[in-house]
Image 1 (tube, rainbow, N blue to C red):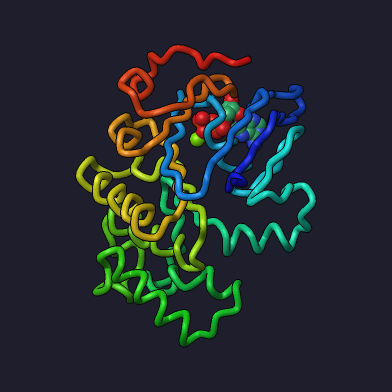
Image 2 (image 1 turned 180 degrees about the vertical axis):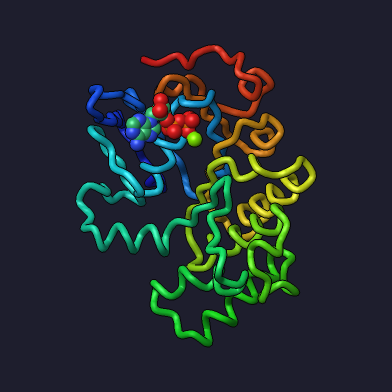
Length: 243
Ligand code: ADP
Ligand code: MG
C-alpha cells in the first residue's frame, strides 16, 4: 500500500548572511492513511520545519517528499496551493483566526478559495461549528471567545474542505489542561470517525500518549519512531537503530 506521506532523506537548510543552518539532517518517514501520531522533541529541534514541509508550506533543500505517491517537487505552484487548501487542514498554537471576521466567516474562508457558493459555505460552516460544540456562536468575533473556543473554531476551519490530513503544531500549547484535553478529543474523534490522518506536534507527554505513534526528533534527526512508551513520551528513549 502506498503511504499517504513519504519523506526520504529530507534535508532542510536555512540560509542567512551568517551562513547556512541545517535544520533537518536527512529525515525519512512514512505515514499511512488513518494514522494518529505525535511529533515530539526539544525547542529548536526542527518540528515546525518538518511540519511546514509535510504541509507543503516549504520545500526540502534535498531529498524527496511524496504525498499520496506524487513527488511534491513535480507539482506546480497552483497544484500545491490546491493541495494545501483542500487536502490538508492546519491548526496552530495561536489559532491564527482573522480578528475582524465572525467565527462562521473564519470557518467558511477556506471554502471561498475552493469555489463553494456563499450559501453552501454558510451552511457547511454552521455544521462544522456545531461539530466542535460552537453551534450557538456563529456571529462571535475571536476576541469574544475563550482560547479553547477559538481553537475549536480553528479546528472547524481546518476541516472546511474535508482534508485527508490534519496537521496541528502545538495545538494545546496555549490552552489550560482541561481545554487541551477537549481539543485533543476532537482530533481523536476525527481520526476514529472520519479516518482523517492526524499529525500533532506537542511538548506534552499526555497529548502524545493519546496517539498511536511517537516520532521524536532532536537536532533535526529522527531519534525514535514507535509506540508511545513511557520512555518515548518522556524523552529517555534509546536511539532508533538505523541500518
Ligand atoms: P521547533 O519547531 O522544533 O522548535 P523549528 O523547526 O522551528 O524548531 O526550528 C529548527 C531550527 O531551525 C531552529 O534552530 C531555528 O532557529 C531554525 N529556523 C527555523 N526557521 C528558520 C528560518 N526561517 N530561518 C533560519 N533559521 C530557522
Ligand atoms: Mg515549533
